[in-house]
Image (cartoon, rainbow, N blue to C red; front, side, top):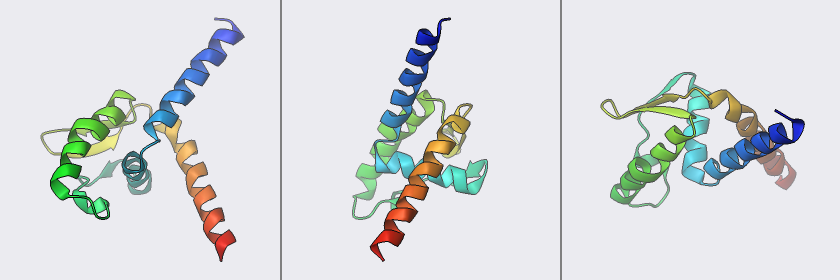
Length: 111
């Protein structure tokens, strides 16, 4: 594989990660997993402010959980309704750390 091929692969993976992170709910889910270690309790509608619980539940089950699972970032146990870190979770942790650091810097700059 040439270095150009490697860069294209890396750029493609970065684009995929950024696509997964483009929704607040998916970021919250990943941050909850990062904070809780390997396992996190089922994500419930209480994670959203002002959204209809039934609508959010449908979105989580039919959009957000499958997208995170397809990217390899989570493993979703549908029977137990539980998420755990997926095989590629370590690829997104540095991005999550950077997002949290930027959020902290932004908050402290406002004060």
